[in-house]
Length: 330
Image (cartoon, rainbow, N blue to C red; front, side, top):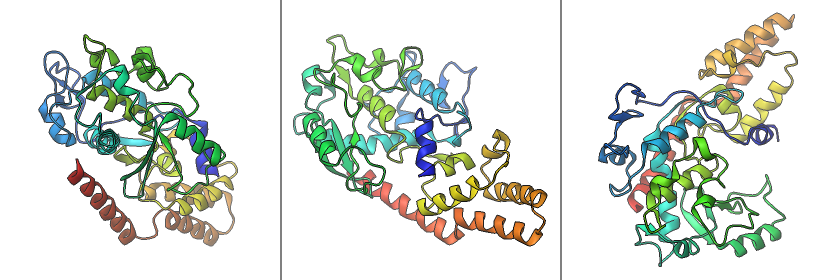
Protein backbone atom coordinates (compact mmCIF):
# COMPACT_ATOMS: atom_id res chain seq x y z
CA UNK A 1 0.00 0.00 0.00
CA UNK A 2 1.61 3.23 -1.15
CA UNK A 3 0.49 5.42 1.73
CA UNK A 4 1.83 3.01 4.33
CA UNK A 5 5.02 2.49 2.36
CA UNK A 6 5.67 6.23 2.42
CA UNK A 7 5.20 6.22 6.18
CA UNK A 8 7.51 3.25 6.56
CA UNK A 9 10.20 4.89 4.48
CA UNK A 10 10.19 7.82 6.88
CA UNK A 11 9.79 5.97 10.16
CA UNK A 12 11.03 8.96 12.10
CA UNK A 13 7.65 10.55 11.45
CA UNK A 14 9.16 13.99 11.30
CA UNK A 15 6.43 16.59 11.41
CA UNK A 16 6.70 20.20 10.39
CA UNK A 17 7.35 23.67 10.98
CA UNK A 18 5.20 25.88 13.16
CA UNK A 19 3.24 25.78 16.38
CA UNK A 20 -0.45 26.37 16.14
CA UNK A 21 -2.05 29.42 17.80
CA UNK A 22 0.93 30.01 20.10
CA UNK A 23 4.18 31.54 18.89
CA UNK A 24 7.56 30.45 20.19
CA UNK A 25 8.80 33.51 22.08
CA UNK A 26 12.54 32.95 21.88
CA UNK A 27 13.44 36.21 23.57
CA UNK A 28 11.08 35.75 26.48
CA UNK A 29 12.85 33.60 29.08
CA UNK A 30 9.57 33.14 31.01
CA UNK A 31 7.71 31.66 28.06
CA UNK A 32 8.30 28.60 25.91
CA UNK A 33 6.13 27.59 22.97
CA UNK A 34 3.82 30.42 23.90
CA UNK A 35 3.15 29.19 27.46
CA UNK A 36 4.53 30.44 30.77
CA UNK A 37 7.21 28.47 32.59
CA UNK A 38 8.47 28.73 36.15
CA UNK A 39 12.06 29.53 37.12
CA UNK A 40 13.04 25.86 36.80
CA UNK A 41 11.61 25.61 33.30
CA UNK A 42 8.43 23.66 34.05
CA UNK A 43 5.18 24.73 32.44
CA UNK A 44 2.77 26.46 34.77
CA UNK A 45 -0.90 25.67 35.35
CA UNK A 46 -1.68 27.74 32.25
CA UNK A 47 -0.40 24.98 29.98
CA UNK A 48 -2.10 22.22 31.96
CA UNK A 49 -5.40 24.04 31.67
CA UNK A 50 -4.96 24.44 27.90
CA UNK A 51 -4.06 20.74 27.59
CA UNK A 52 -6.85 19.69 29.97
CA UNK A 53 -4.49 17.66 32.15
CA UNK A 54 -4.22 17.65 35.96
CA UNK A 55 -2.23 20.52 37.47
CA UNK A 56 0.05 18.16 39.38
CA UNK A 57 1.58 16.87 36.13
CA UNK A 58 4.69 19.01 35.78
CA UNK A 59 6.03 18.93 32.23
CA UNK A 60 9.42 20.46 31.60
CA UNK A 61 9.61 22.91 28.73
CA UNK A 62 12.70 21.20 27.29
CA UNK A 63 10.62 18.10 26.65
CA UNK A 64 8.08 19.79 24.42
CA UNK A 65 10.59 22.19 22.92
CA UNK A 66 12.70 19.23 21.79
CA UNK A 67 9.59 17.33 20.76
CA UNK A 68 8.48 20.18 18.51
CA UNK A 69 12.01 20.73 17.23
CA UNK A 70 12.32 17.11 16.13
CA UNK A 71 8.85 16.81 14.70
CA UNK A 72 8.87 20.06 12.78
CA UNK A 73 11.91 19.08 10.77
CA UNK A 74 10.85 18.43 7.16
CA UNK A 75 11.98 14.96 6.10
CA UNK A 76 11.80 15.26 3.20
CA UNK A 77 8.67 17.42 3.33
CA UNK A 78 6.54 18.86 6.09
CA UNK A 79 3.66 16.73 7.27
CA UNK A 80 2.08 19.53 9.29
CA UNK A 81 2.08 23.25 8.71
CA UNK A 82 1.16 23.83 12.36
CA UNK A 83 0.79 21.83 15.57
CA UNK A 84 -1.35 22.61 18.59
CA UNK A 85 1.01 21.29 21.26
CA UNK A 86 -1.44 21.66 24.15
CA UNK A 87 -4.17 19.65 22.42
CA UNK A 88 -1.59 17.09 21.34
CA UNK A 89 -0.41 16.54 24.92
CA UNK A 90 -4.03 16.50 26.05
CA UNK A 91 -4.85 13.74 23.57
CA UNK A 92 -1.88 11.71 24.79
CA UNK A 93 -3.10 12.06 28.37
CA UNK A 94 -6.59 10.87 27.45
CA UNK A 95 -5.17 7.56 26.29
CA UNK A 96 -2.31 7.25 28.78
CA UNK A 97 -4.56 7.88 31.78
CA UNK A 98 -6.78 4.99 30.68
CA UNK A 99 -3.76 2.70 30.52
CA UNK A 100 -2.60 3.82 33.96
CA UNK A 101 -6.06 3.43 35.45
CA UNK A 102 -6.30 -0.10 34.08
CA UNK A 103 -3.87 -1.13 36.84
CA UNK A 104 -5.44 -1.10 40.30
CA UNK A 105 -1.96 -0.98 41.80
CA UNK A 106 -0.80 2.06 39.82
CA UNK A 107 -3.92 4.15 39.24
CA UNK A 108 -3.50 6.26 42.39
CA UNK A 109 0.28 6.70 42.21
CA UNK A 110 2.04 9.94 41.30
CA UNK A 111 5.57 8.50 41.17
CA UNK A 112 6.67 5.09 39.97
CA UNK A 113 9.52 2.88 41.12
CA UNK A 114 11.17 0.32 38.87
CA UNK A 115 9.04 -2.35 40.49
CA UNK A 116 5.91 -0.27 39.87
CA UNK A 117 6.76 0.09 36.21
CA UNK A 118 6.87 -3.67 35.78
CA UNK A 119 3.12 -3.65 36.37
CA UNK A 120 2.38 -1.17 33.60
CA UNK A 121 0.76 -2.78 30.56
CA UNK A 122 3.33 -3.42 27.86
CA UNK A 123 0.84 -3.11 24.97
CA UNK A 124 -2.75 -2.07 24.46
CA UNK A 125 -5.69 -1.89 22.06
CA UNK A 126 -7.98 1.09 21.48
CA UNK A 127 -11.36 1.03 19.80
CA UNK A 128 -12.39 3.49 17.10
CA UNK A 129 -13.64 5.92 19.76
CA UNK A 130 -10.23 6.07 21.42
CA UNK A 131 -11.27 4.00 24.43
CA UNK A 132 -9.03 1.34 25.90
CA UNK A 133 -10.43 -2.15 25.28
CA UNK A 134 -7.56 -4.44 26.30
CA UNK A 135 -4.08 -4.36 27.80
CA UNK A 136 -1.27 -6.90 27.63
CA UNK A 137 1.79 -7.87 29.59
CA UNK A 138 4.97 -8.24 27.57
CA UNK A 139 4.56 -12.02 27.41
CA UNK A 140 0.90 -11.73 26.40
CA UNK A 141 1.83 -9.23 23.68
CA UNK A 142 4.45 -11.58 22.24
CA UNK A 143 1.94 -14.42 22.21
CA UNK A 144 -0.62 -12.26 20.42
CA UNK A 145 1.95 -11.18 17.83
CA UNK A 146 2.76 -14.83 17.15
CA UNK A 147 -0.93 -15.68 16.84
CA UNK A 148 -1.52 -12.81 14.42
CA UNK A 149 1.73 -13.53 12.55
CA UNK A 150 3.23 -10.18 13.40
CA UNK A 151 1.94 -6.65 12.99
CA UNK A 152 0.12 -6.78 9.66
CA UNK A 153 -0.89 -3.69 7.71
CA UNK A 154 -4.27 -5.23 6.95
CA UNK A 155 -5.31 -6.00 10.53
CA UNK A 156 -8.60 -4.49 11.62
CA UNK A 157 -8.68 -1.71 14.21
CA UNK A 158 -9.78 -4.21 16.86
CA UNK A 159 -6.70 -6.36 16.13
CA UNK A 160 -4.10 -3.60 16.11
CA UNK A 161 -1.88 -3.77 19.18
CA UNK A 162 0.35 -0.86 20.20
CA UNK A 163 3.34 -0.70 22.55
CA UNK A 164 2.94 1.58 25.56
CA UNK A 165 6.59 2.63 25.53
CA UNK A 166 8.70 0.04 23.81
CA UNK A 167 9.45 -1.76 20.59
CA UNK A 168 7.44 -4.96 20.22
CA UNK A 169 10.35 -7.40 20.39
CA UNK A 170 12.65 -5.66 22.87
CA UNK A 171 14.15 -8.30 25.17
CA UNK A 172 15.28 -5.62 27.63
CA UNK A 173 11.82 -4.50 28.74
CA UNK A 174 12.14 -6.22 32.12
CA UNK A 175 13.65 -5.10 34.40
CA UNK A 176 12.94 -1.53 33.43
CA UNK A 177 15.18 1.47 33.99
CA UNK A 178 15.14 5.14 33.08
CA UNK A 179 17.45 4.74 30.07
CA UNK A 180 14.93 2.32 28.62
CA UNK A 181 12.18 4.88 28.96
CA UNK A 182 14.19 7.56 27.20
CA UNK A 183 16.77 6.30 24.73
CA UNK A 184 14.82 3.20 23.77
CA UNK A 185 12.20 5.48 22.31
CA UNK A 186 13.90 6.27 18.99
CA UNK A 187 12.84 9.93 19.08
CA UNK A 188 14.44 10.65 22.43
CA UNK A 189 18.13 10.27 21.69
CA UNK A 190 20.61 11.82 24.08
CA UNK A 191 21.04 15.35 22.74
CA UNK A 192 17.50 15.98 21.55
CA UNK A 193 15.42 13.99 23.99
CA UNK A 194 12.73 14.79 26.50
CA UNK A 195 15.37 15.69 29.10
CA UNK A 196 14.25 12.67 31.06
CA UNK A 197 16.37 13.48 34.10
CA UNK A 198 13.84 16.22 34.87
CA UNK A 199 11.38 13.46 35.75
CA UNK A 200 13.65 11.27 37.91
CA UNK A 201 13.28 11.77 41.66
CA UNK A 202 16.07 11.47 44.22
CA UNK A 203 14.98 7.92 45.06
CA UNK A 204 15.16 6.90 41.39
CA UNK A 205 11.41 6.85 40.84
CA UNK A 206 9.80 8.39 37.77
CA UNK A 207 7.09 11.06 37.83
CA UNK A 208 3.77 10.65 36.04
CA UNK A 209 4.78 13.50 33.73
CA UNK A 210 7.86 11.54 32.67
CA UNK A 211 5.77 8.53 31.76
CA UNK A 212 3.34 10.74 29.86
CA UNK A 213 6.17 12.25 27.81
CA UNK A 214 7.59 8.80 27.04
CA UNK A 215 4.15 7.59 26.00
CA UNK A 216 3.73 10.57 23.69
CA UNK A 217 7.14 9.87 22.17
CA UNK A 218 6.23 6.31 21.35
CA UNK A 219 2.64 6.76 20.26
CA UNK A 220 2.07 10.17 18.70
CA UNK A 221 2.20 8.81 15.17
CA UNK A 222 -0.05 5.82 15.73
CA UNK A 223 -3.13 6.95 17.61
CA UNK A 224 -4.30 10.28 16.19
CA UNK A 225 -2.67 12.19 19.03
CA UNK A 226 -1.22 15.09 17.06
CA UNK A 227 -3.53 18.02 16.37
CA UNK A 228 -2.49 20.32 13.56
CA UNK A 229 -2.96 21.53 10.02
CA UNK A 230 -1.68 18.92 7.61
CA UNK A 231 0.18 19.67 4.42
CA UNK A 232 -0.48 17.89 1.14
CA UNK A 233 2.35 15.51 2.05
CA UNK A 234 0.75 14.90 5.44
CA UNK A 235 -2.60 14.13 3.84
CA UNK A 236 -0.96 11.69 1.44
CA UNK A 237 0.69 9.98 4.42
CA UNK A 238 -2.71 9.52 6.01
CA UNK A 239 -2.22 11.97 8.88
CA UNK A 240 -5.39 13.95 8.22
CA UNK A 241 -8.19 12.41 10.27
CA UNK A 242 -10.82 13.90 7.96
CA UNK A 243 -9.58 12.16 4.82
CA UNK A 244 -10.94 8.73 3.93
CA UNK A 245 -8.15 6.10 3.65
CA UNK A 246 -9.73 4.56 0.55
CA UNK A 247 -9.75 7.95 -1.15
CA UNK A 248 -6.12 8.41 -0.16
CA UNK A 249 -5.22 5.11 -1.77
CA UNK A 250 -6.91 6.16 -5.01
CA UNK A 251 -5.15 9.51 -4.84
CA UNK A 252 -1.76 7.91 -4.31
CA UNK A 253 -2.34 5.60 -7.26
CA UNK A 254 -3.12 8.59 -9.47
CA UNK A 255 -0.10 10.51 -8.25
CA UNK A 256 2.10 7.50 -8.96
CA UNK A 257 0.93 7.74 -12.55
CA UNK A 258 2.26 11.28 -12.90
CA UNK A 259 5.62 10.44 -14.36
CA UNK A 260 7.76 13.54 -14.24
CA UNK A 261 5.52 15.51 -11.85
CA UNK A 262 7.72 17.84 -9.74
CA UNK A 263 7.20 16.61 -6.18
CA UNK A 264 9.16 19.44 -4.61
CA UNK A 265 8.77 21.07 -1.20
CA UNK A 266 7.02 24.11 -2.66
CA UNK A 267 4.15 21.90 -3.78
CA UNK A 268 4.10 19.16 -1.13
CA UNK A 269 4.34 21.58 1.81
CA UNK A 270 1.20 23.43 0.80
CA UNK A 271 -1.95 22.94 2.87
CA UNK A 272 -4.56 24.06 0.36
CA UNK A 273 -6.18 21.32 -1.67
CA UNK A 274 -7.30 23.94 -4.13
CA UNK A 275 -3.72 25.08 -4.71
CA UNK A 276 -2.58 21.48 -5.03
CA UNK A 277 -5.34 20.81 -7.53
CA UNK A 278 -4.26 23.87 -9.50
CA UNK A 279 -0.66 22.63 -9.49
CA UNK A 280 -1.79 19.30 -10.87
CA UNK A 281 -3.97 21.00 -13.45
CA UNK A 282 -1.16 23.27 -14.58
CA UNK A 283 1.21 20.37 -14.94
CA UNK A 284 -1.33 18.27 -16.81
CA UNK A 285 -2.15 21.15 -19.14
CA UNK A 286 1.50 21.40 -20.02
CA UNK A 287 1.77 17.66 -20.57
CA UNK A 288 -1.57 16.77 -22.14
CA UNK A 289 -2.96 17.83 -25.46
CA UNK A 290 -6.55 17.40 -24.30
CA UNK A 291 -7.51 20.30 -21.97
CA UNK A 292 -10.79 18.56 -21.07
CA UNK A 293 -8.84 15.57 -19.81
CA UNK A 294 -6.68 17.87 -17.71
CA UNK A 295 -9.68 19.52 -16.04
CA UNK A 296 -11.28 16.13 -15.46
CA UNK A 297 -8.13 14.82 -13.81
CA UNK A 298 -7.83 17.85 -11.53
CA UNK A 299 -11.45 17.51 -10.49
CA UNK A 300 -10.97 13.82 -9.69
CA UNK A 301 -7.98 14.56 -7.47
CA UNK A 302 -9.89 17.17 -5.49
CA UNK A 303 -12.95 14.97 -5.08
CA UNK A 304 -10.85 12.05 -3.93
CA UNK A 305 -9.38 14.04 -1.06
CA UNK A 306 -12.59 15.63 0.15
CA UNK A 307 -15.84 14.39 -1.37
CA UNK A 308 -17.82 17.27 0.06
CA UNK A 309 -17.57 20.02 2.63
CA UNK A 310 -20.50 18.48 4.51
CA UNK A 311 -18.67 15.17 4.87
CA UNK A 312 -15.58 16.86 6.26
CA UNK A 313 -17.61 18.89 8.74
CA UNK A 314 -19.48 15.79 9.87
CA UNK A 315 -16.25 13.92 10.48
CA UNK A 316 -14.89 16.87 12.43
CA UNK A 317 -18.01 16.86 14.59
CA UNK A 318 -17.63 13.13 15.22
CA UNK A 319 -13.98 13.57 16.20
CA UNK A 320 -14.86 16.42 18.54
CA UNK A 321 -17.58 14.29 20.16
CA UNK A 322 -15.16 11.40 20.54
CA UNK A 323 -12.55 13.47 22.37
CA UNK A 324 -15.23 15.21 24.46
CA UNK A 325 -16.41 11.81 25.68
CA UNK A 326 -12.84 10.96 26.66
CA UNK A 327 -12.56 14.31 28.47
CA UNK A 328 -15.42 13.22 30.71
CA UNK A 329 -13.54 10.05 31.59
CA UNK A 330 -10.32 11.71 32.82
